[in-house]
Image (cartoon, rainbow, N blue to C red; front, side, top):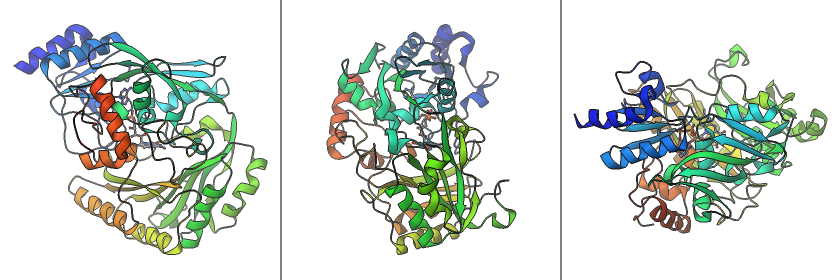
Length: 459
Ligand SMILES: Cc1cc2nc3c(=O)[nH]c(=O)nc-3n(C[C@H](O)[C@H](O)[C@H](O)COP(=O)(O)OP(=O)(O)OC[C@H]3O[C@@H](n4cnc5c(N)ncnc54)[C@H](O)[C@@H]3O)c2cc1C
């Protein structure tokens, strides 16, 4: 009964944009990218303005209902879905304004990366996100944002110039280098801990044609070393990601390779094919199985399906490798290939080059402090059903151990959100500073469905 009157208060604010389990479209709206055990929210609040966000937060504060904030709904830990609580759904706030003269892209808090990239591309401009257009600008930016342009332009959060934030007490504030600089610092890596971000101002750069696409190689330790060295030692115009994985049954993969271990890269060189030729030469000298790298508009890198289908179940662990231009030795590369060869289902060791512009930022300048590693690594295991999830989790744990993936990690790729994960995401000094900002902006810890920075925890 209590819940019904609570949701009635929300319906008075949002009308038919307040969905309860009885509403048409509730199940589809509640869906997040990653599947898992059932979580049924009491209500989904489909807000359109910062003022509506503030009004919903007032009801949440008064009723004590658990709260989740979601934009793209892609986080592996399923932060955007809270059982028995209110999902503050930002997806109707998907506006993107490209101010070419100022060099600033302004995205509402529920816009998707692909929507932003398409709008910016119309002006020959862009901001670097990841490799997938269906990820929310809000989630990827507040946690980090590593992708096709990050060695050249830094993480997405390094390009966040400012934001409009609805705080836990309902105030709507700006956060940038001049206004609320402590909040601005915390937003760049601290995730959804500090408020609901209703507008993100991002630095734009000119980018039209790039040389990019997918390459695939026969997996040998030497080949993996060569591929990773090409990224670590190559020019900053080259970024991307490398997967050691079982070849998916996709149309661009020759049928005889389906289910076999491969090395695969999705890459972008921000230049013409002629400019990229020397950089790509060592990759093309390997035993190439597929070479789809060509000149194309940058925005075309985000067309097509964005990874595994919605509802995929799995587990993921992240970490970092080496420093500077480190690349793996043969034994490590062999262990990665062996682990994937023994995986039961679609599983991958995903390795992303860092360095370049990422490493030039002072670790204390943003709440994302892992500036020195050579690579970020994520071990992802998929399960065909909930029953098979423990086997996927065991594979992820075994592989993490074999590859030395322990300790610090990237908050946006963490499959779980324990206190230890939070400590892995933030070095001690960063976490202490995040707690200070949390005490100033969300002392009652209203925003908990995230990698939670508890206001009064200990490091
Ligand atoms: C297929 C796939 C590909 C990916 N590729 C990359 C990649 O290339 N590079 C990379 O860095 N990451 C990548 N990611 C990880 C991705 O960055 C994170 O999952 C990110 O959290 C997703 O953001 P979201 O808004 O879609 O998710 P949500 O689940 O909606 O949100 C995630 C977290 O951010 C908070 N949040 C989101 N928006 C707001 C907002 N406006 N205000 C306040 N809090 C907010 C939520 O409360 C939640 O805690 C990928 C994930 C998937 C599933």
